[in-house]
Length: 98
Image (tube, rainbow, N blue to C red):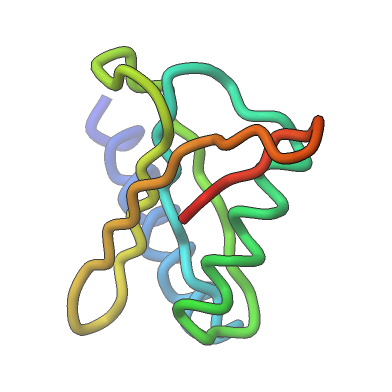
């Protein structure tokens, strides 16, 4: 059992190093429901504008404690950035307002 835990730690450390080398920032997106692919693409695009790295990788989390909207958490080397957003209908299509 200890070997399984060790493998998980090694995989997590490998992911951190790979992300640093590829200038990839990992953002955690918490929402009440699973988000549509087009919403995730828009979130990644806006997160990239805020952080500046070449790549943004999203990890999604379902958080039933939220009433509505989403929370985006981006961990950078020198701190954390939290963004609260809500979904706004805009001329017949869903859009995120950050």
